[in-house]
Image (cartoon, rainbow, N blue to C red; front, side):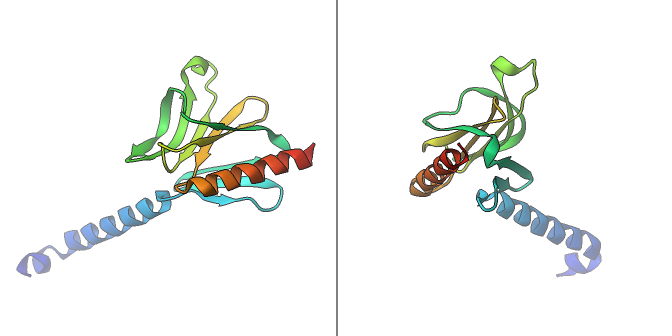
Length: 143
């Protein structure tokens, strides 16, 4: 107790740091998906992407994500999130967004704006398949 009285400033800094880290961890804990209106919005912590349905070109189910170079992001346990660049496109600096909650399960590969990619899945594989079916129906409605 004597330690906290003498160093109250550092104690407050320590507690604030722990709380901020906890909030950031909670923000990245899962993918937040909004499929309302006329666009798909994906959020996970600091990463956010919005894809209008009319810009969607294809929706595919893939087993693995191709080898890519991480621009920023993180991998922890079965999660993979962030902004990447494919090795073959390293000269064009084209961003690939990855929102994967379970690396072992199938992922949805969205192709939009003719050549931009986005990989996403949810912790629950049934919800991932439901999201894919919903996106396929949006593409067929746009055509």
